[in-house]
Image (cartoon, rainbow, N blue to C red):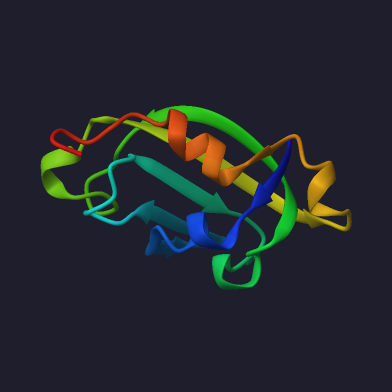
Length: 109
């Protein structure tokens, strides 16, 4: 999927960890959405705001050590980002903002 990483939505994440050539980001604890970003091949979320990326969307359970302890095992939207695509943002199929609007919600969020 051609996904626009809009800057405001990107700022809703914090770096949760790095394993090999992957960086894992999770929505901040005060954010109502539960989502995980997995950036591959050394990509850095700080450099992707405003750009279109090749991404795959799915679901997975939150992992201990990456998500708040009380949310371990809870359902999260998972966005795997593979590479930046050189194209105008208006040609993206969806935006990260749209994905986050559909993500599972935190209790009370």
